Length: 589
Image 1 (cartoon, rainbow, N blue to C red):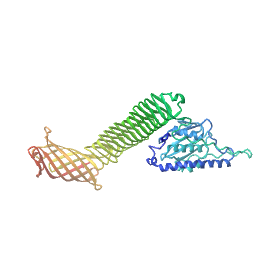
Image 2 (image 1 turned 45 degrees about the horizontal axis):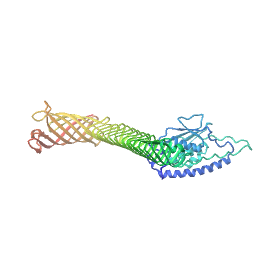
Image 3 (image 1 turned 90 degrees about the vertical axis):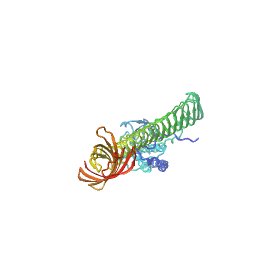
Image 4 (image 1 turned 180 degrees about the vertical axis):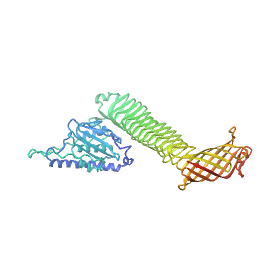
């Protein structure tokens, strides 16, 4: 049965370019280069050590081992996987620590922003040497390349290694190694022995030192075949009753209760209560209860799914949580991803605390990161630097919005570079906010006063983005047998024709009321094309033609034109009349 490998997921994510994750050709070429490098490096070591006197080769770390510091890597990294690879390469213990110590040999691993890694070695004698290389996409080969670089740095062979790996110049050149010590007196020199090469890395889906069996099973943990063989066993097929505990499975594990693996899964786990893998899971975990793995490549299907590391594949259930990058999808009632990148979340409530979030579909979506691509739901919140598309009843972008917000309420606390379309829109800056109420903090604000041929004298505010605005007005109709109060609400756009000249195209609605009881008597809609001339920096005059349609209960209510109008509809309960008109006004600010 062919199953995926068990190596932890080390593929760069989040801060690295997305194209790096897709560059399979480059990964294959670098993988082949690593194999060729081993032969070249070995030949170089043999030639160098044959020519140099004793003491010219830097000493390898002592039996006390080497410390490993992971210095703010901006990509998904499993320090344990790298530590194990370094231990095999250096042939001694490697300890992951938080900070370097001047008293111990230390390797510092740092992820660069463009897909490279920098490894620096500090020896106990004060020597410092470092190199920056590209790493393959495949996590096994990436760990092997980092370990091989560490071995050459420790043995002072890094120059040849960097050239073979296609090193590009780093921003800060590594410190040059000191000159080799003086050669001893003639006759005492003895070529140093060649450093022993470590054994090759174990094959995928295997555990060094563990026994592999075809079939095993437990009634409860440690009671069953594990009573005889112990727990350091990798089973091809595992059949369990209440529960089981073994090192790994490379095929299928069936259990009526709880399945527990201490090292890895490379296949399928099925249970009624829980599947627990205290290491990477490659394949599928299916249960009616809880699925748990440190990292996942494949699928977790169950009510509760938890991956304490990166996920490449799918989590599906009531609650799905990934504490690492999600390169795939989370499908459930509630989904949470806390990692470098999240691709797809579909559920009632979705939370992504990552620098990059692609798609969230649910009733409530929250993305807390630098970039959010698409959110679709009843309520969307993107608290990152940029957000592309939000479609919901309520959208909030607590940062710059580069795409569109479409909903009843749209809020962007940064600059909108795309569009807001909704009933109420708010933004610090926006080129296009279309809604009944638009509030642009740094947008255009004008105070207008205008009059019409039908006797309307109005004052109001024109406010909006660079090219679109809202009009809010109040006034009075002075013509006719009695004065009427008027309220206006409208939308419009502006076209700049020059430094002092502009054109506004507006659509307004007026509501006319009896002053004493505020009873509505008529409704007037107006489309107008205005040409404005700025006489002073903060003062302009404007005017232009309009077309008006009035609605009233009686012909008298709808007859607002002083020179007659065209009847569109007249009966005992409803009258509609239309006429061309003119608008003249002034604008301040």
